[in-house]
Length: 224
Image (tube, rainbow, N blue to C red; front, top):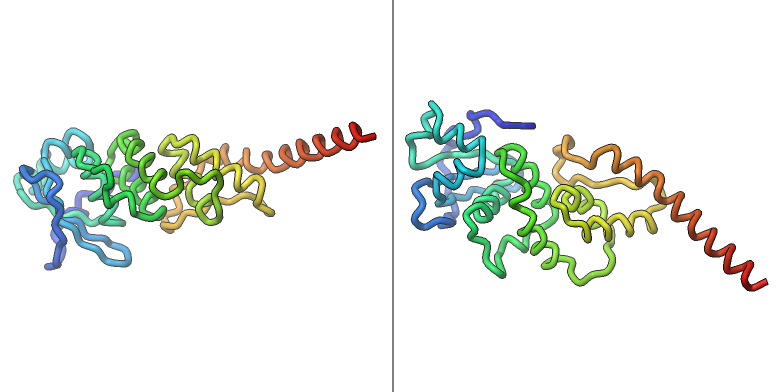
């Protein structure tokens, strides 16, 4: 697991931060800067005890011998700043029924999983949010199209969304000409489907073809 070093919390140069009052009564301001492109800087007002309770990374950072333990403002560099701000909203139970976070694209979903690994959150806490995001983007679709199917396999597996994984798999098995491949839109390649899952996709098209041929042959025999 990539636990990330504490040097990520060193203060960056002066930037303009958009502010999110996730916990208006919070005692900690976390200033997040994206290290990728496009550059994004967000300040999140949060509760220190909520981060400590839900993250081994933040527990070490905010209760250990680091300077941040005594500071009211902490600087964090993240692969995607928006993903960490969404995590803060989920952990503080501040996600609204029509929350703007449901508008993010599939790439951000990957970054949410990567952020979970880096900051040591529990991925299970994101499952409810992801279910609502899925409804916002794809429900009540009965099928998926490229590239959604390829990019959604891994998030649906990791976030226990059986329906999404089923639809994505069905589309690829029935429509993919070559070997089935997932697409990781982040470029951080250590995050991917387990090999055992990929092997199943190599087998499934052959089983589907065999089933189709069997059905067609049986129908032809019945017509004789």
